[in-house]
Image (cartoon, rainbow, N blue to C red; front, top):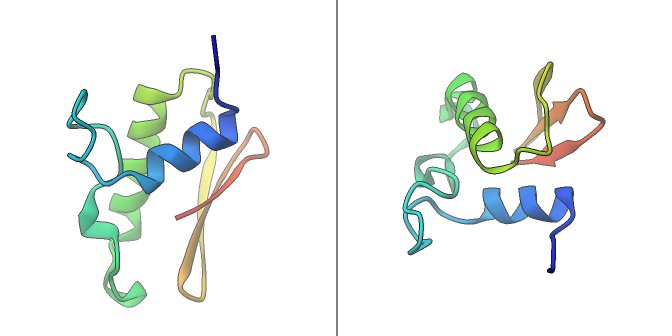
Length: 87
């Protein structure tokens, strides 16, 4: 059986618009966070969305600590496991 790496699985999860995956309409990132001015994004809501998606769809990640950093027009979510996700 083919199994995605953890990083590939997370990239796929966050690059999929919510509602576009036919088998599970809740899979993917809410499109309200996509193509927005970085100054108008609610980063707390974005972090909450990302953490709930990881908890639901990626059981290999046990989140104990997460931090969200804004660098220019990028949001970087760092997990305690040493994984950094660009959002």
